[in-house]
Image 1: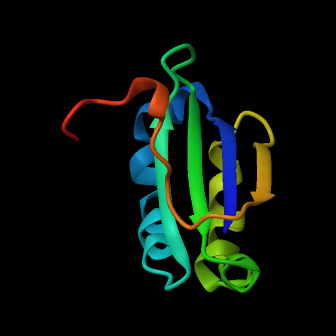
Image 2: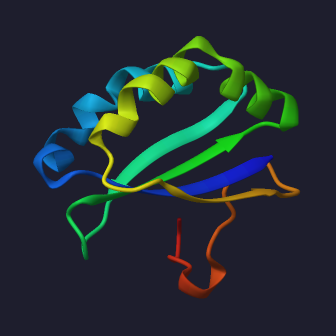
Length: 109
């Protein structure tokens, strides 16, 4: 799978509304057949920063995502709400889901 983590620094005046601002893009991406997950989290250290954790089944699914109409629309709409260019880490990895964190195993789960 392609595993991606991206940090988005949002303009302070838009940070509280970011989930709504990015909602159409998020919903459309989650509906893609090759999307495994697409999850936003807000930083506890910087309320203007959101972290996106996303994964796509393979390179073809990633290419379909970047080539989609909703991705192109997000490229037009979302930068107006950003304080800086997002930072990204993107890696192809040999797994298809989350692994358990054995060092913090919960008995019976």
